[in-house]
Length: 232
Image 1 (cartoon, rainbow, N blue to C red):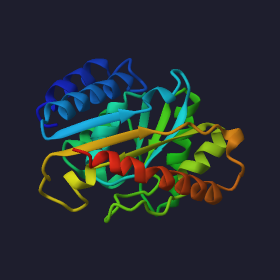
Image 2 (cartoon, rainbow, N blue to C red):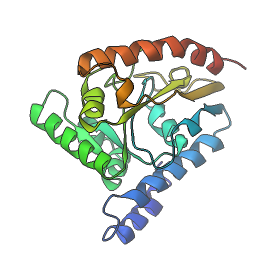
Image 3 (cartoon, rainbow, N blue to C red):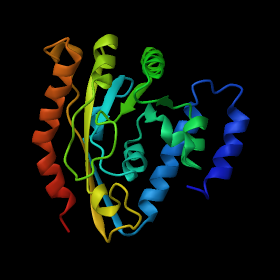
Image 4 (tube, rainbow, N blue to C red):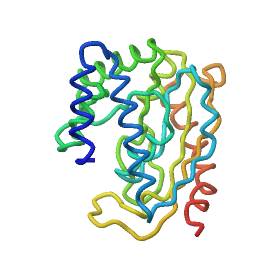
């Protein structure tokens, strides 16, 4: 990530006057992620269902969260989106710089004003046909289990009447768990895109109820995905 930074920074400066949505920087980060992911020989990455996201269609993309590596590897889906990130990541050297250059959306958890600003910015992106990528758990799972889903992603989907695209990722926690400082051995990472759910199939206008419905739906599909990730 550090090696790529000077090149991306220079390009960011060059395109800054006309790339208002930071689309060019986003795609640079996507291809950076692809290069890093596939150059590391101890990782074997498999992606299934990428084609389920229809080109030109806008989604609220949600994923479970097991490791900081999820951010890098989910970029390999090669979708056009804006990440929603906790504001603490802005303070992380290199990572925070990338977030700023790409114009990704941040939220100060627990701050109502920040949450309202995040929702407004996300709705604006969806209105410009830019999808939103968010971890509804809000943070990495400490034990690999999928935690409680916060309501933000689902409030956004209901407000914008936008389809939700669930994505499952497994295997990253075995490589680098939460608070871990050492990378694990050879591992397989599985990324599985589930069928998108259009707003007419939500079955409710209650954000909390919808969040729980998606959590149960993803839990049911996660076990098979996890098994795929541990195959040698």
